[in-house]
Image (cartoon, rainbow, N blue to C red; front, top):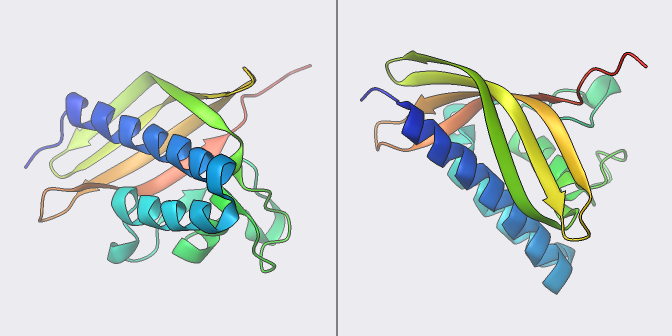
Length: 158
C-alpha cells in the first residue's frame, strides 16, 4: 500500500498529539504517568518493533547524540533516567499545541520521507520551532511508523 500526503499529515498530527498527551500527563499526574503515556506513544508512533530507529533528537549531544533504542528515546522525551543525565524531558514541557509545515516529501511504496518545520507551543505561550525530518514505513498491518527522526534547531548566523 503506497503512502500518500494525507497519511503523512495524519502521522504528524499523531506525533503532535503524543507530545501534548505526555505534557498533560506530566502536568496533571507527574512523571510516573508521563512515562506510561510516553511508552505508549513510542509504541504507537515509532517503529522500534522493526529494530533500531534512526533517532537524532533536537537537544542531544556527545556520546548520546543518537538514540536508536526505545530506552534512549523514552529518556529524551521524559528525562528522569540516570543513564541519560543530560535529558530534561523534551516531552514534559507543557506543550499544548503542535503545528507542522512541509518543505518536501518523498514517496516510494511503503516508505516515505518528510522534511519541514515543527512548532511546539507551550501553555504559557512560549514556542519552539525545529527543523525536522521523518522517515516512515508502512507495516504489514497498515500502521505507519517513524523509522527515522532527525531534529535540530534552525541555523542562526548571528
